[in-house]
Image (cartoon, rainbow, N blue to C red; front, side):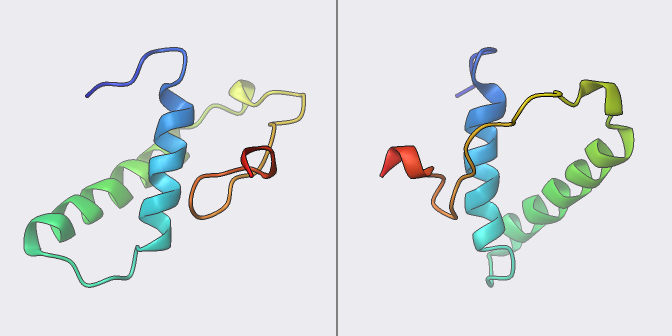
Length: 73
């Protein structure tokens, strides 16, 4: 299911945190293919990221490996 515009980065961040916590796990061939594709697109995003997009204010709460902040607990 696609993410809504107002929360796509928040939802994707939480999914990426989950992927990060299991990045070195043994996966099926299909999942391994998508892991490589995910790493490729993340690298591409970093290379193309425009510094002007960075907010000057605090980025908000940090999330743990399960995608929860201190406020969620």
